[in-house]
Image (cartoon, rainbow, N blue to C red; front, side, top):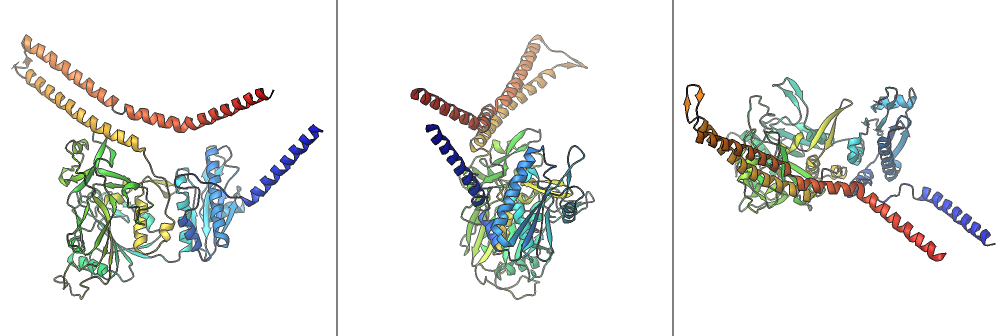
Length: 615
């Protein structure tokens, strides 16, 4: 009887378990808990807003060759995540987004459809199979957009890529941005290499969301359909063009300006093939000072934010002018910067408010308190970055590297247009001007924030900093729209361990000081050796006294000892850092499994003791 009850109880539990599983498969389909820091497995609020704004239905086709992917576990796991994310998008979209999952068999109609929509097959290593793994979408008017292949190295940009596709299909007209630049940011022809130049990736991405009209450097007025004026390194502009910009801003036009006291890219990437060295200071005088903002002539050096670069001898070294700022240095109360994780800048200037200005300056990016002025004349091509650090002393102040300027303003030209300009204009702003200024131009160049590769004939961007996001945010915010912000990538950029980075910088400073001391001793020893060897010379024969020979021997031994000590300093430089990194890797890779095993052993041991006690 007891055994009968036991069997009945087990059967009842089994039936209940099956019922719970069946109900959960239906009721809880797609439900999950996302514990990642950036919630990369969930739709962001921005993407939900974007989907809500879709007016006409969008058809999505997810092409995935399941059989061909067999035996490729990383790709299968990635494909499962993509499919689940697309299902979540379709679930959020309801009738607005229709999702079809297609397995394009070889020589089938589905394969022909994938090819016609631009999804590209990738041949696998055996030479017999090809793999389709892409997304195509179409809107109600027949326009199509495609992600030819979901690359493994873009897993953190999944939401961004899909949201961008949805935005393009759902936005028939794009806001117009007027671009005035003295640098070839939109690409062009390179007269030096006689090859076409690709557009900078920051602007390549920008024109996916906005219509960009390239303006001539000589303008009598900004075109009336331009809603936002974008200036990139505005040097050498005529009074006529400056006055046109002045009137555009005073008349309610929005301005985003990238100015720079020392632009690295302005030399080699200038429109002028004979240009050498950094471009001139693009302070946008007299406009910015009249509106309440000044650009420094010096640069910002920051020991806390210095990035590691390769010196002229190939040895990594921290460069005080190459700066990497995390979220703690970005204004988390301003929509332009609040969702950006990191920004890299190169030889940036800093901004200050003009005394008595009627406008308000709101910092967007600020330095650490380990910063100070860095005179631009100290920067020389091919220089060793350690030279900058040797005489650097932080001021304890924080410097503003990017800012928002708003409020009432007056014309830079007073009550009348400049000489030679026949125009009647505004003397003061109609309301509050809206201007955003970044004191760096180089940060827009690819090498500061993104790796660009050619894949299946297309340029594929893998960002390692949030420079592109910040540009999109700034343009979108100044246009008064939230669409681009809503689809902004939540990609995880490189987030170094703070403690490890601090140790590296400290070790770098200690090494530089010790190395300089040893190098000085080495130079002094070599100088004495040279003097001693040249002290007495007859014809081509070098003759030394016994005392001089002993002295020479002693100097040679000293030289060898110094070089040995120098090697030891270099060898031991990062020992503590490597040990800490090793410990962190161990805890990440083996720590959690060990804890699970230990927990299982404890539970098993407790059960064994309980059974012994019962018996």
